[in-house]
Image (cartoon, rainbow, N blue to C red; front, side):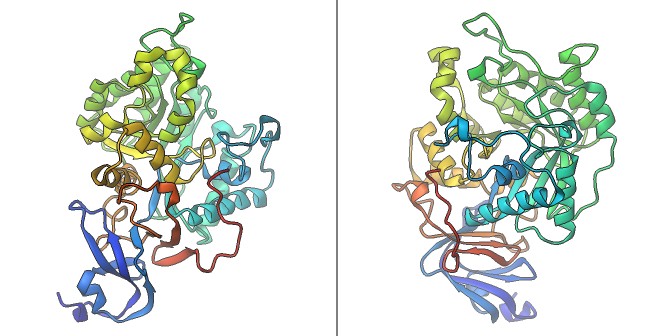
Length: 453
């Protein structure tokens, strides 16, 4: 088709730089045309179109909009600029109820969206909002925060696309099976899923290795093995298995916080027994610190995946190593095996635990992998763009810069696939969501994001 046959002029044309499409062939082009929020042409065809607005990349590189597939935006917006892994002393960390009113809850989300736009993040997963946290300490995870999301969504105020998981227990804590069964029966709110998709549920299976609360096969030095968090009259294991099964039978995505090999194993067994149930999006393990090679292979075979946090691994490796010992520590956080297996794997921040800056997460990934070359960098870029779109069940319409997909674009000062320079040193020049610029460094007059925080 000739570009002049495409119909009306483009709304936006990007040209004059390198555009990494992150398509299945790893294609690179030099121009991209947008109409009504969608990509309508690439390369020479795009350049033939008249456009109402143009952006000269001036040698910069564009990639698909970054998608952080595990980020607590409400909590981040309420706490910013304070992160758990930061230089903020414990005594100065925010505590107690962080948001009290509807206006404060909406303000927390809008604060997070401004920050994410500055970081080139166009989509994220809010991993756990719901009635289990209605009496929660921070006020950032209960039903009232779901209401804030819905209010802003219906007002068309979003500058980032959101995938949201419902929560029927407490954050990082237990959940009762009866409460879970009652909660999941509540109807999912009606939304435009391209902006606010409520795809499934979050379940906390266990704790973390440094606290000896991951549920593991090999005991810790003190003889304990961790334990499961879900509860029921029939026991924790019954509750855990049943929660997963109920959600799968309803066609919901299931994300489990599971760090120990035993909690991952039980999740896998339930998934393998319910493979006939079609979900809105693939189920996955969050963290997966101690996943085994066999488990990674089985997860790939059933189309499930992992959402991992290399930056948290970097922060906690020595602490966890005191409980795991040298051999288990060396095998922990198996990002290399996940990528090599082609299992669905997303690299995420878990902000505000760690910084939401994806560049720091990719630098931590390079350190974890122990190499820095172009194929490795390209593989990492896929884990923050198209693979998160797969996790969202949305790869048909976002995650890569292909004709027909939404025009969500992150423009960088340099090519992130070129080895030899830290990702953290690459500036973010522009963030485009649905064809609309939501951040432009040339016009930004606020306090810039400080990666040292």
